[in-house]
Image (cartoon, rainbow, N blue to C red; front, side, top):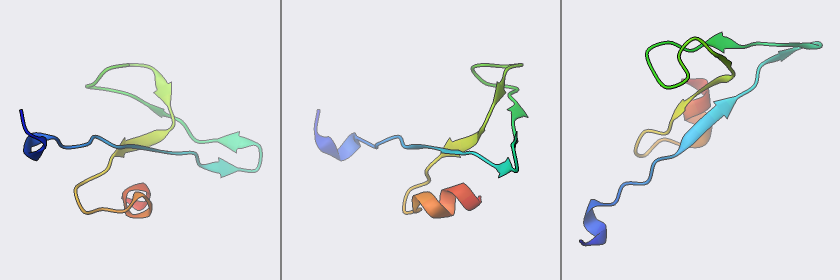
Length: 55
């Protein structure tokens, strides 16, 4: 196997705060379904972590 086929997977998480309140979203359709978590996702190729967080 060569390194030509390796694609790193990068996850990004975002915590939204408003005063002492924290925004959580209920997960669905993936691992951890029906649990509460902070917003997050994965980095697209060529995308910066900041761009990913905004998306």
